[in-house]
Image (cartoon, rainbow, N blue to C red):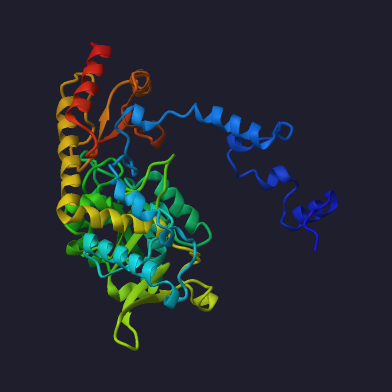
Length: 443
């Protein structure tokens, strides 16, 4: 069968789906990503391609050359050398999916240990063997909750990472679910009174983030209480590093916890590598997406590992599948397990504590700048939001001085606000230099 279509075939196919032209077919895409003229050059030799790519690479500006305060889900943490070495061993780098347990005991054990770490951090009973990234783990968590109680309304906090919300809406675009958004208070946290008014008998779940997109810690206990009174479930996005200091979500009664695991030994690399984590209560395990590695014993009573639950359509009838996830991000999840095992409980706690202390030191120093204000007054962990007039101009003036002042929030409808973060890699000298530079520029 030929897959090369002539103009007549294309015209017939477009007519069948109710489109007049190819431009009409792709009209839903943003105009800025549609390139009508590719202007391709003639083919290059291998040597010429190498040289061209080398010249292009020189335009990159490594983050190590900047005093960066970027956060918003991906953070510049120190990665011990042993993480890179151990995770590069051939048995972990292999793309082979561990269907045959007798051939895959090592990688299955590594994934099992990763799952165990996620359960220890969240306090919940079970964790799946990782997902693509934080945004998809959130969307899968919402779908999971909808399957559990079979209601059709969703309440989401307006302080969830906007890109996570976009991913959720994409996942739900083929379904008939109603999404309600709840606003926030001057503390930079979810408006509980508004939430209480939005909840009704059709509410399936309440989805929120803590620490939220602006950096502030939610009143998880009250959110869970409101949900339980209405028979709704709770889905919480969180930064796993914060769980070294903050109370475990399970102790508040949260039903599903998810988020981005890049902070656990992941590189930044232009926004990755990433993996999503998801943990839940044992009673919901059969609605969990992805895979679950379990521990058992073989005929000789030796400890062994196998894929206990495989919930995608490849393994069971399509209508019974809970997800169409085709692979876990096992390499990145195993890196997280290596990272956590190397640091141990005390080391992981210190990373979180240093991040918290430095962020609060930064907050106190920024208060010295009379042009800077703080639009929200809530408690925060490792990042918070500040405000300055003409924030774009402020940002680019500092950028020229090789300082990244955080994430501009204008495009997320927080005018002149900047989200700023600290990790354990920051020093007081870095922060003092940042403040000194602001004072030099603005007087």
